[in-house]
Length: 422
Image: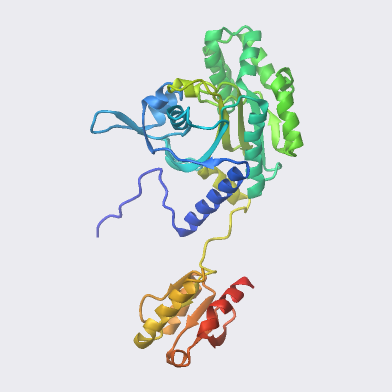
């Protein structure tokens, strides 16, 4: 017997019940995105690695991307993220687009990481961006969209929180504690890794990155200051908008939020599960990226959320939909060879009304067909035997209660619709 061929490491098989959850999540994302006036778009799954090399950071390009040479010799990657693609697309048609531009997308991405719970090499990701304006109002809108998504799926502020900060504010504070300008990008990365490292190891890492012991203590003081945001005027407007929207319970200031990608220029945010600290989504402002890919300077802000971790958290709190079945589907049985065409004809007629219909694909004993329906979660089965064919009737059987009723064939579709609506 041949060995079973396994799926590629870090990928997932979507059986129907898994696909139903993926579709449900997509629909929630679509509802929230479109409720704020965002349009759906998509980019290619393959890009030149040069698109990411300049601004996404060495770790993403050199360690996490699936990279290969195509037959023409170009270095190609399976896309690890979408923001560079978005900015490339905007730069290509910048004079034709209407700004501010609101776009969203949900599609597959790849990163060469060590697979573990909550992290796969192939995943689906929600991306939503507001391009063409650099204001606290735009920042608040993106955060509000995330909070509304959490509300939509049942994740309350007691379960998740969105942490916000501003890299420009942190750079100003680093300047105040006399961190040289050339060191500040590295120190921002140090801040970003604080919650991912043991405190003593992080201290050593910060000192190795160029901070003096006095600067390290000053930096720790900054990171523990919940009122630091008050030094930044844009935050006053931001929080007033969030309060008007009634979403303040979801939002908190956190000086430790930096976001690792190097293209972020200002406002940044990240959402976490309160119990366990799992990161659910993150984003921020990238005001230089369109010009970096050849377009005219254009501000932008965006957020991304992978499907793996959010699904784990929703499952933890029993917020996923019930497992998919065919409860709203009708089974039309095939009594025998003489009745088969009549069953197929009836199934086709009912399908025209909008009801999903399964016609049993072979001639088999009736108990076998009804057992199939029961196992698939189908509630109603239609039986068309010789008597029904002769009298232009059908028998509708309720498999949940074992009741059945024979009705006129021409009225059966309407009757089934009533039964399913009950």
